[in-house]
Image (cartoon, rainbow, N blue to C red; front, side):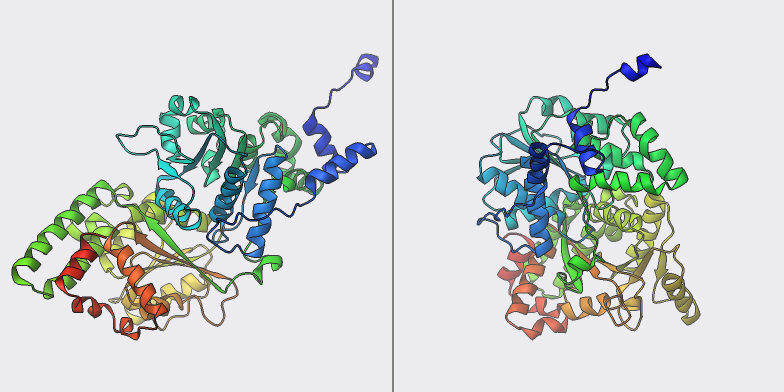
Amino acid sequence: MFAQINKKTKLNKFDLLQAKLNDEAVFDSDLENFFDEIFTPKNIKVPTSLKADLREYQLRGFQWNINNLLNGFGTILADDMGLGKTIQAITTLLYLIENNHIKNETIVVVPTSLLTNWENELNRFAPSLKHFLYYGSKRVMQKSDIIFTTYDLIRRDIDTFKKLKIDCLIIDEAQKIKNPDTNLTKAIKSLKAKYKIALSGTPVENNLSELWSIFDFSLPKYLRSLKDFKKNYAKDIEIHKDRIKIERLKKITAPFMLRRLKTDKNIISDLPDKIIIDEYVTMTKEQVTLYQTVVNETMKQIEETDAKGVIFKLIISLKQICNHPRNFDKISQNSVTKSGKAQLLMTLLDNIILQDEKVLIFTQYTQMADMLVELIQKELLVSPLLLKGNMSKKKREAVVNSFQNDNQYKIFILSLKAGGVGLNLTAANHVIHYDLWFNPAVENQATDRAFRIGQKKKVTVHRLITKGSFEEKIDKMIKSKQKLSDLSVNIGESWLKDMDTEELKGLFLGE
């Protein structure tokens, strides 16, 4: 007993910090002032080169991020889906690079389905930053301000990344490293970096060990070992719902994990009722091959016959190819890996389900709707509801009622013509347009199944657009027409037939 009493416990810096955050110790005035200083928000100015206006809560997120990083702490930005984690991260990078806090490599690790989105957002909001994509079978590392790569490639090519001098490491969809024992998680955590940022709308999916794993990336050893964490927090919180332990954990994690929800009264007034996000995807090899073949064959027909009638058929074919090769050729394997859109869809749905929210998915093609049911069942192990035009009135009413009132059904797939008008589906606060109609009025009618009187939540609309395809070009044309109040767009897609041959070539072949 005397030996135990005389045994001195050596406290490290994290022990002292946690004691301060939990009000468990009294420090001298110098140390108290030091703690107050590092956690007092600073008025850090947004880089003038940022091509965007941050919302108030996004500005606070950026300043919080910079304050923590420059004080030597890693961060976890855990805002709700649709609140703009990416733009806050890009603003943070821009500030660090322009103020010479970053002089070496910045690595951004994302799921494959989000590579195009990140590239697009960076080009749009921070065009002054150079970036390089480390991806593909012929990948070779190059120097750049920012290097984008995927989780799978970090795991496979870890030796390549360990040779780099990394100043900043960002991981998006950080729940990918929730299991501390996987080779992927170990590879990510083996990389050394001056600044570490984790982005995740769902930092805890199943148990508190996942939170520990993300903290172990952004702020290693802060929550001690996993064994210690389970003993000190996880077991008592998960099994006994120990409120004192819950509050203690909240206090010590809150300064380094920022989570805002769309329902938060402090930010809800800062949001539009409808958040529209253009989600850009990259075609798979199968899609690229099919796409180019169909375009080349059709352009030959146009050259030979100048037949505008083939244009509408071309649009349908290319839309289907952008959706999924099987939607076009009817024989390709119905696999997520065959389609860029299908891959991104699964990422979006995974987040929506984990947040216990509901979603409508619209597609023009009934075959695609059937394919999505099969893919979702196979990938996410949940059964979505489906509404198609050939269903009886009684059956339609039954599936609508199930979606609105039964919480086990999170996903509702609708063919655009069958479900685009006349339905009240306010149980959903997400709408995904899997393929676009190229008619703003039709698209808005479909969105308004959820965005209508009776909707108590902010509605997030995801528009899937294939990068580098005619989808992206037509979307830009429509947006420019809307700015000019060109109402001719509202007549549907027939306006495309009025374009001359050279305009059509530009739309389907080149820039």
